[in-house]
Image (tube, rainbow, N blue to C red; front, side, top):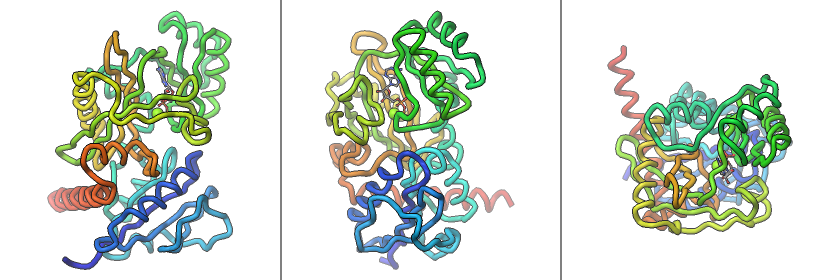
Length: 346
Ligand SMILES: Nc1ncnc2c1ncn2[C@@H]1O[C@H](COP(=O)(O)OP(=O)(O)O)[C@@H](O)[C@H]1O
Ligand SMILES: [Mg+2]
């Protein structure tokens, strides 16, 4: 065995999921095999400052603005580094950070620029998946500049009620609402328009929420499906992070044929969206209707002790420390493959 790989955990960030990201990083730091990895923790504060956190001391719950700033390029330049981005939402999961890592020429865990930005933008992801014939709920998209009343009426005429309204580029259910009347639909459009220029409007699916973990580059594999049973009317921000009301079922309580279908569709979606490394693919399942409907793909899923992504791998026979190793191996494999392509380019 050569020297240890320097595993740079990139966490925190400017999104609503800052705290979740800190918990994920702490957990990855604890689970990473110290014989193989020298773990370095690089945090981004809510203000956007980059800080080197001390290890092996436990990582903080959140980052303070008064820490010492560092230049990320210097951290990435150290030999044998692999970056593990654990920053969720905009400016982390949306391809911007991945672009920085590409320019820094350092291997990193997870999807590249295109897949990250595609999956972050629900309207674009839906378009690509529709083009490839993947089953999804009926939906429309609108601009935040459109008149909300006109949009609400048109959406109800086409999709009926209730509706789900969400900003195209968010996560953690921020700005997501369920509307049961025209007035609620107008309010929901106004709320979603606060967060993004593009708004998604979907028919509400009455069914189960199913999630599948996918891992791999050219030959991705899918975990056993899990299920989220929301504690609230839907799986909203409070339910995800504050109230602990949601239940995670592993495996999902669905028939074997539906589980097989979810795994197959998860890999299809992963491929058409050009995902690499890892992603969690979420579905809405209509038991008596259309079956498994693709909902969204998350390229940086949570890595907390209660997060679905690592849990599903545990249940599929891949324990947390090995999952981290596999993700790092995939990052290096992809980096080296792209280096080959670049050599041919010249
Ligand atoms: N079309 C839909 N039908 C039923 N429930 C939905 C629909 N869209 C979203 N939801 C509910 O809202 C939650 C958040 O929506 P989602 O599209 O996953 O956005 P986010 O990226 O914020 O997680 C889902 O987990 C689900 O509970
Ligand atoms: Mg979601």
